[in-house]
Structures are given as structure tokens and as C-alpha cells.
Image 1 (cartoon, rainbow, N blue to C red):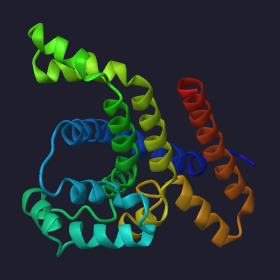
Image 2 (cartoon, one colour):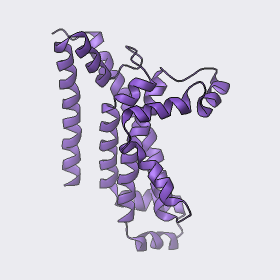
Image 3 (tube, rainbow, N blue to C red):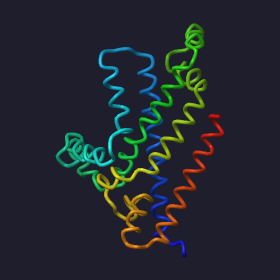
Image 4 (cartoon, rainbow, N blue to C red):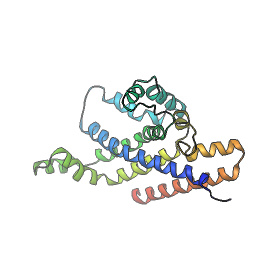
Length: 220
């Protein structure tokens, strides 16, 4: 088959969406993991359950909840509209939000596991030498759990890359705007264009295989 712009658009869009979501979950995941590992407070178990909930919810439920929260009648959606005068549903931003929500638990859980294995005596020694909490976190704790960060990064990226159901509901199927590779595969199959569907399947399998191969090299 001839690889036209229509073939590459979903691939480029999927990579842009997944990479943007990854940058967000890197910041949110590491910050949340640091807070949860180093603090004890009432409701901690409840909060962590909410963090991990997207890993077990059906994609349609995740999409439904995103619509309720970020739709024109949702309290977050209403707030965004009051500032930017636009609804983010059926936009690329909606695809990024969805990818971020489903990818966050993988980054959070990986970094949290890594931080719990860091020897606290090393952190205490750094504090004794005058380092503040953020210096200890960035220059001591994170380097010591580097493998966990790599694991979380790859798992989060591949999860964001493969997201379908919630994205389809919340961001829609707009070619060149929100049509990621999983949605493009579904659309092509419905249209009976199996050659194009197979080409997209091959592309996403190849990317996922490479990422998982890197993960095994770093963590085994």
C-alpha cells in the first residue's frame, strides 16, 4: 500500500498525545509518589485507591466520568469555559487528558515502589549535610530509584499510546485532531479497509514491542 498523509496522521497524533501525557504524569506521578510515601494522614488509603482506580475501571466508565467532569455541564468543564471560552471535549486536549488519566497510575505506582526501597538513612545523611527536602528528592531519592522511573515511564507511555475507549467517548473520532491509531484501526475495520488497519496494527505493535524491549533491558 502507499503510505499517505492519512496513514501517518494517526501515528504522529498518537505519539504527540502519548508524549505530552507522559510529561504530565512524570511530574504528577513523582510528586504524588513522594507525598504518599513520606506522609501519613487520614484518608490516605482512600486517596491512593482513587489514584489507582483508572487501572480497573472499564474504559467506557472512565470516558463517562471525564465527560461528566469536563463536559459543558461539569464543574471542571464550566471552570475551563469561564477562562478560555471553549469546551475541551472533542479536541486534542481531551485526548491528552484521557491519556494522562489512564497513564498516571502506572507512573505513580512504579515511582512509589522505587521510593519505598530507598534507604532512608541515605536521605537523612543528605539532610544532615544541609540539603533541603527537594534537593534530597531530586539528587538522592530519584537517582536511587532510576529503574522504577524508567519502568513507570515506559508503562505509562505504552498505556497512553494504546488508549481507545475513553478517548473515543471523550475526544471523539476526528481525523487529524483526535483520531489516534487505536481509533483509526477501529474505523478502518468498520469500513472494511483491512490493509490500512493491518498497517496501523503493525505500527503500534512495533512501537510497543520496542518500548517493552527497552523496559526489559533496563529492569532485568
